[in-house]
Structure formats: C-alpha cells, structure tokens
Image (cartoon, rainbow, N blue to C red; front, side, top):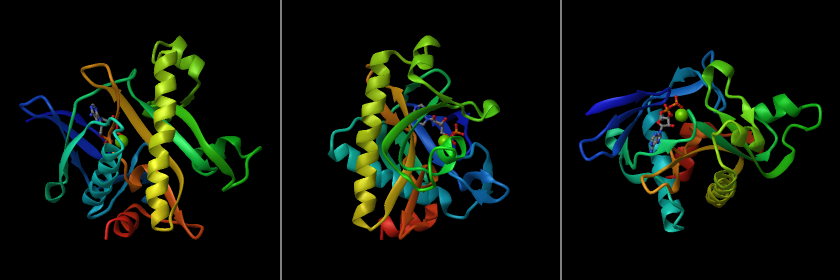
Amino acid sequence: MERVYIGKTKDVYKQEDGNYLLQFKDDVTGEDGVFDPGANTVGLTIDGAGKAGLKLTKFFFEKLKDREIPTHYIDATIEEATMTVIPASIFGEGLEVICRYRAVGSFLRRYGKYAEEGQVLDGFVEVTLKDDERKDPPISEDALRMLGILTTEEYQVLKERTVQIADVVKEELAVKGIELYDIKLEFGKDSNNQIILIDEISGGNMRAYKDGEYIEPLKLQKIMIS
Ligand SMILES: Nc1ncnc2c1ncn2[C@@H]1O[C@H](COP(=O)(O)OP(=O)(O)O)[C@@H](O)[C@H]1O
Ligand SMILES: [Mg+2]
C-alpha cells in the first residue's frame, strides 16, 4: 500500500481499491508534554491513544450514519488501529471547522477582552486554515470566498453540517453526563462533489468536561464506550 501522507496523529495509505486507510498513531497534539486538542504540533505519545481515538471515531461516525449525515467512513479495525474511508478532495490546503459551546482555548486567548472563561457560546462556528507555519489562522467567510477556497454555497453547507454534527456529539456525551465545550471537524468532497465529513471525531479534537472538570481523551473513550 502506498503511503500518501504522514500526519501528526495519523498516517494515510491508498489501498488498491482506491479507498484510503487511516492508521491511527499514539501521538497526540500538544506542547511540552501537555495535551492540547487545539495545538498543531505533536506534544506527546500516550500508549493506547491511537486505538482510543479510533474507538470513539467509529462510535460517532456510526451515529452519524444512523442519521444519514454523509461521511467518509467505511469501516474500522480496532486491533490494527485502522479505518477505511472514502478519499476526499479537501478545500484549499485544508480547513478546520470549529463549533464552540463554551469559551475556552484559542477563542478565549483571542477574545478574552470581551469573553469570560467558560461563557456559553451556543454553537458558534468558525473556520481556520490548516497552516502550521502560520499557526492555523481563523478566516472569515468573505476571505474564504475571495481567496477561492470556498463558494458561498459551500460555506453555508459546511456551517450547517458542522452544527448538526456537533449537536449529535453533544447529545451523545450528555447521555453520560458529559458536556461538550468545543469540537473541531474537517470536511472534503467525494467523487460526486458531495460535501462529506472526513478525518476523525475523538477526544483529540474536542474538549469535554464533566462537573466542570476537563476529561482527557483516553478517559473520554472509556466513559463513552464501556
Ligand atoms: N477521507 C479523507 N480523504 C482525504 N484526506 C483525508 C481524509 N480523512 C482524513 N484526511 C486527512 O488525512 C490527514 C490525517 O492525519 P492527521 O495526523 O490528522 O493530519 P494532520 O497532521 O494534518 O492533522 C489529515 O490531513 C486529514 O485532513
Ligand atoms: Mg489531524
């Protein structure tokens, strides 16, 4: 199998049938050994992080399938920490769409003059560019259109889908008494030009709290799937 991409937390292979295989690694994002889902460097390696991330991803992508929300998910093999997916073309060189329910992380760092830590944000959506060199800058709808990264219609679909998907995750966490503070999603287009959710949904790309206390990715997996 041909390896087409080496990512921070996953490697991507192209299968003979044309589908992609995502290999989940034990590397997680963060800085100086401290986990941070918003970071764009590998901060540390945690035994079992890859499988835990895949278990949660499988769990959430199957929930989305039940609700007929289109994603790249085909199947997953937990023992191997691999997931087979539909290959998608990405927007520009990659976007991240964030849905925020409470003010933490980079939102608070940027808007701390006007927002209080933990303030309710009601499913606020923002887009950032995947650009490690420039620290994943936020980008407005106007700039996305002007730079030819998204059309107005595509932006609308992305925004609506993001809220819809984040609400599903929020609901599922709530079943276990966990509150979703924020989540980061990625989208692409399949061969029919349909916009689909790609990548992963795991503790590595969301902030989840229980009784006001942050829950680490591995613990989140254990609580959600026991
Ligand atoms: N279905 C897909 N089609 C194409 N690219 C995908 C798909 N799913 C995930 N990817 C990409 O594969 C990479 C996964 O590796 P990851 O370690 O998360 O990368 P990164 O370091 O860019 O965050 C990401 O860049 C993601 O955009
Ligand atoms: Mg990633």
